[in-house]
Image (cartoon, rainbow over all chains, first blue to last red; front, side, top):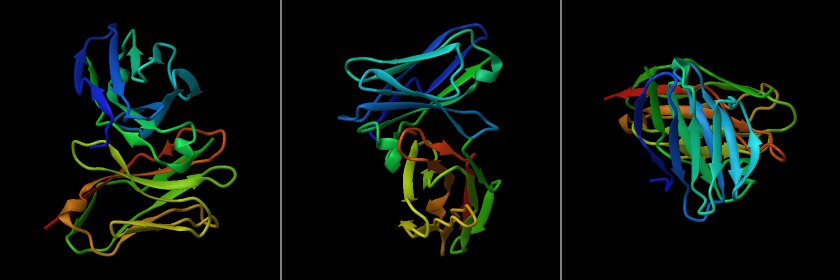
Length: 116
Length: 113
């Protein structure tokens, strides 16, 4: 158990809808990272938050947004969903902003989104 | 931009066979290199890492050597077990100013008894 909790584990919805994925980082971790894993692609970095502030942005669509709350949990909001958004969404956490520099990212089990 | 290329899977081996999973990378500067493993139904876990050229990372019988001249970080294990069946991801990070890991597409390993 990595200590990172993601909910829901599975989600099925229709095109055009909006969903929210939730992540609770390990106790004491200040950084949260979101990654997307599609069937034919590797893990694509979406966005990072550190202590409530956005710190780095990757290949995140404008239809997607995220935030980190004062209790350090994070939510990833996906709107106007398309079939191509079907993927496994991972959250990871680390102690600080340098977490990725040492490789010590702790991953949740992922949220599998299916858009029909 | 940065990229990581891994060999296509699945890789199917018999128990006690030798394992190699190839990984090559493209990045400027001197990235740190990592192998993560994802067991069925679980999240990714850091398996091993190397932060500079010629470093060898090792853990749980797995090894990988950072080869800057060939921009490679191949994963090896001398004798695989059924419990090693998982998806293996190679990743890199260019360090200061880059906070996210760049991952390869993953290689599924299936070990048969």
